[in-house]
Length: 313
Image 1: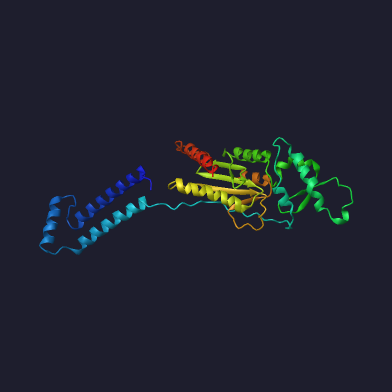
Image 2: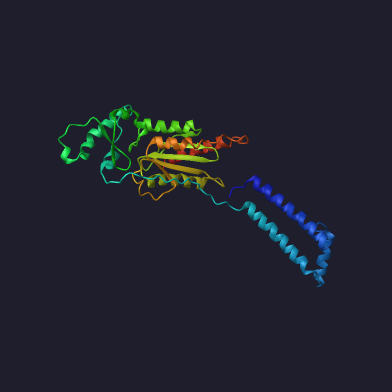
């Protein structure tokens, strides 16, 4: 346990309070001055000569010692670290069906970061959409409306023009545009965005911090179990390096494949980035208190060091 000057001062203050209280009690009840050496010598003589001494004197002495030790324990005892995570349940109202499109989309690698979102989306549609066309319509011409996947593996028709705003729709493979959009949402709500990390082949789309030692961590198109694993790695580092400091981690996933069966109710789940934006806009980051005294800057530098360390794991 680290030695903290405030704990030492509290211990000294408590001992002074107990000593003054005991002095008042013994002077009032027994006429005994605990600061007088002559009185202590007189007590020693009475004990040596086996003279009777009031039982209340010994009881009062024992209670005083117990109160002093118990108060010191309350001051220096270790605090149990609690990670407070919000709970949000997203009702999935669409029907769930089993398809293999998620497996194909997880294998898609973004080979050119400068390629437009529209080109990538159209390439995915041309490759996989024919698998979803019923057999009795396979010979028909392509309809003028595109078929896009949703996070619950159903399909809905959307006009071709809406693909230009695809940063508001669900993706299983996040793009640079998705990452920048999410980071901008949190910047606009007062949070400080940090560099993303990659753990077990999974890259986050957001790491942001706020006042009161809060932290946001999010991914796109991954399972809630994977996000929980990333959060637990951060929590382990916090537990090993911090003393009596609680960091609240808010985790979220956009388009989680296991959203319908997730066992982690503390991981926020959203269908689209637009849903995330609506949720975060109602939870602005509180301004720094007047007595911050550089604590937030120290917290920010600590998170930078943790991200640098965890990226090497």
